[in-house]
Image 1: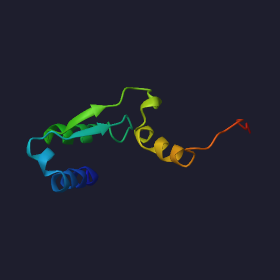
Image 2: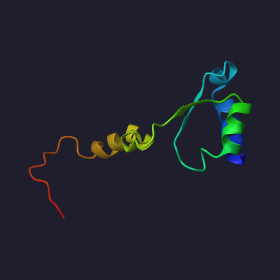
Image 3: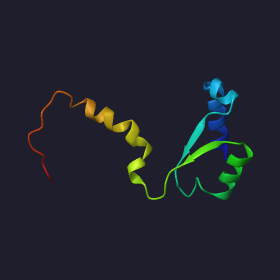
Image 4: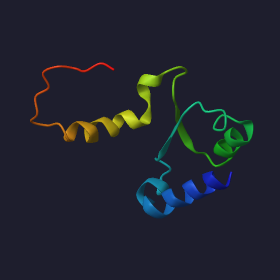
Length: 86
């Protein structure tokens, strides 16, 4: 619960524009610790807008949105002729 309070405080301090009209959204995955009743009650009590990740959807992992561009950046301009399999 303390982590959620810290998150809300960080949003409040860093994104005052979003906090003022409650337009920030928490991307919420299906981890058991995130779907516990105490967490759900906290989010409802504090009117936190959330987006649930669809069940069994590994292709929508949050790291996909930023990680692979950073990995690919090292290979821009290089040509790969074969793929080695191990």
